[in-house]
Structures are given as structure tokens and as C-alpha cells.
Image (cartoon, rainbow, N blue to C red; front, side):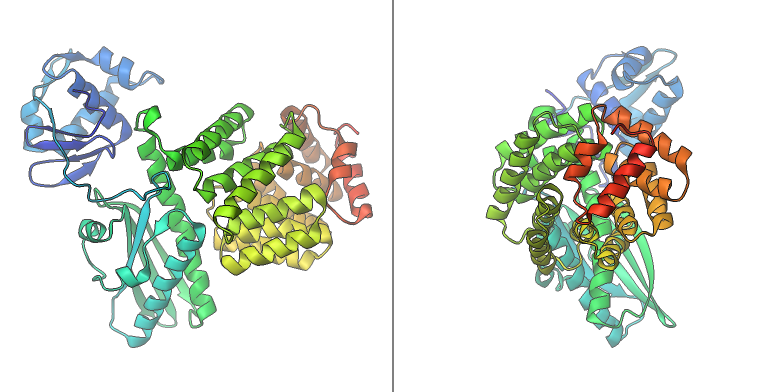
Length: 517
């Protein structure tokens, strides 16, 4: 029996190998750390025989060097998770290794409590429970209703994870057990929270839990003032939603990495590709493109995957890594239009396409039209606001460019793509000739991701303007390393600033910093 597949039961213990959850006879569940899970799987495969400490190190820690203490810690965790059964089944052979004396059997799990969403590559489902009130208060109850609707609405605009309608969750008790709520609603993740009024401030507490094990993935508090309008409620709800979504994706990615490679569905391929894209390392970036194409082939009905593929083509062009620029432009257009054919109101596909209309074609009017459509569909989505900022900078509408960049950052301050948000804020301030602020945002962008060439280039321009030439030259050296064929003249000819004087000044600063003309 291959314990890497399905539910494995041994003694009074059951192991969900897909989720890494160990449940003992009294029902208590523990989510195992990845290395602890790997060690247990090794012991199960070699059940009944001695597994030496060297064999464990060679198998579980093949990629790093650790001491025997790492094994001991995992064994302690396993025995604690298994309870009394663990002490009886998992035996230590002094100075040699361990024996798991149990006969596991594959047991049918019965009808799955958490059903995958058909036709979309296993996208996870989130349920948002009503907020608890610490002190009963009709006014607070109205705020709670508004936040529930706002979080559901904001998650719905993101398209993934999928969110259950607030009309379905509103009837549940705010303190319903996570696993019971998940079973009733078919959810993989459950959020719950509370509201407490303290003077003129409102404390919102939120928890996100993984349903199968009730493990808390996120616990956050926000202390707010002036949540007394629909607009304020919606903005707070959007910030909360954009804190939830990345945690769900992180948890799904962790589960996917425990699966066999051939078992990954379209959604988990998308998550893995995103992680590689965030690194902006050329070889990993090319691998990400292959994963995205596999995901699209598996599920052509997933607009978010197509939008991510369009963004991959866009970044490949922007990084100067394309060996076929026309092919990447065509790939970008094809993927974005395919996403919109499936979901004409997909906000990120609309906004990303608008951004590329501006930077590739200087099609400013069409770009603005696409941004308006995107923000009509998702008025509080951070990434949608982010995409729109540079176009206003290129148009010379710098106050609006700055407003849009800062709104994006305020809505999603912990976004894994924050280096891009920070770069776009730098572009907005550069266009406004506020070079100190531009340099400050560019520094943050480069610190968050030193491989993002757009952040480096705008940083060079701003730093040269404020007299920080040495720092600018270091960034220029980084650009040359990342993009050896970079030349200022063809870059400036494609640059999207509508004002030719701005383009010429920008080019001069890049050359002065050491980039080849």
C-alpha cells in the first residue's frame, strides 16, 4: 500500500496524507509540519522494520544538513499527535533508529465532506460567518451585516478563492464550530470574527481557519474609527478580504507541494506558477510560463489562469527577457481576450489589458476605458487600482496617478506583489517631479524585489535627479546584469510618457548613471 495516497488508518489513528492532518482515537486533530509528515510517511512505508537515523536523514533531509535533534523533535511531535497510541506503536531502538509497529490499511473516506468546485481546477471555497458582537448593540449589528456583505463582495471580485453567498452563511450562528459550518456549506476555509466598540473606535477581530483540521491560518485585529458610511464599510471589508485571499492561496500551495506532481490540478499549477513569477529569476520565470500553459490546457474555462498567463507575457516583455517580442505581445492579447470572453467583467484582466494598451501602444483612451470598466466591476480591488496608476502618470495627470497608486497600497499593504505597487507609486511621483518621494518608493520596490527591472529603472532616474548618483549607478549595474542587451535609445522610443521632454530627461539620467545609450 502506498501511504502517499488517501486516508491511512493504523491503530486508533488516521492520517489524511493530502492535508497532512493526523487524527487520534479521541478525535483530536493535528496538522503536521512538512518534515514531520515526511518522516511519518517514511515510517509507514517501512512499517514493522527498523528505519535507521541515517536513512531518515538521507530521505527526509536530503537537501539540507541537520543534526539528530531534528529527527528527535519530529518523533516527539508524532508521539504527541498520536497520543497513547504513539507511545505503543512508535518505538525507539537506542542509538540506531525507530520502528513503527502498526499495520496500516487504506480506508475509504466515505462521501467527501468538502467537495471540489467542478470545472475550475479545484479552486478552494471560503465561507464567511456572521460577526459576533461582544456587547449586543443594534448599531453594531448593522455594521456587522455591512462588513459581511462587503467581505463576500470583495472576495467575489477576486474570482478566487470562491466565496459562498452571504445569504447562505447569515443564518449560521457566529460561533458555529468551523468543521460543522464547513460541512454544511461545502467550504474548505471558514472565516469568523467579532466586533467590539471602545469609545469612538471599533475593534474588528477576524480568524481564517482551514476546515478539515480547524487550524487557524490568520488571526488579525483592526482598530477603526469612523466606520459610519457605506463607503467606509466597503473599504474596510476590502482590506480584510485582501488579507484573507493570500493566506488561502498559501495554504493551498502548501498542500499542493505535498501531492505527487502528476496529481496537481489547474488551480494548484496556477499557484505554483505565481510563486515562481514573484521571484523574477529568469529560469524560474520561464518554468512558470510552462506551468501556466499546462494549467490553461487542463482547464480552458478558468479566466484567472488566462489572466495570469497574459501577465506573464507582459512581465516577460517588461523585464527584457523576450526572445520574440511580437510573439509575446500576441500571447498577451490572446490570453487576455480569452479571459474576457469567459468573464467580461474580470477586473484584473480588464485592468492589466488597459495597462498594456498604454505601455505597448500608447493607447491611452482605450486604456482609460478599460480601467473604468474594471473599477466598475471591482471598485475596491487593490490590483485593479494598481494597474491604472502608471497610465495616468504617462498622460501627465500626476495627481490622479499618485492617488491611484496610494489607494492600491492602502487596500493591500501586505500584497506579495508589493514591489510592483511600490514601483508604480515611484513612477507616479516621478511624473509629478517629486523626485524625493519617487526615489523613496523605488528604494522600497528594489528592496522587496531587486530583480524587477521597472523598479530599478525608475529608481535610477529619480536618484539621479536628487543627486544620489552612486546609488543610481549600483542600480544601473543591476539592470545590466539582469538585462545584458538593454539599450536606452530603443527603450525610450517605446517608453509610454506622452511628454517627449519627460522621455528625453529620463533617457539622459539613465545614460548618466551608466546604462549604454
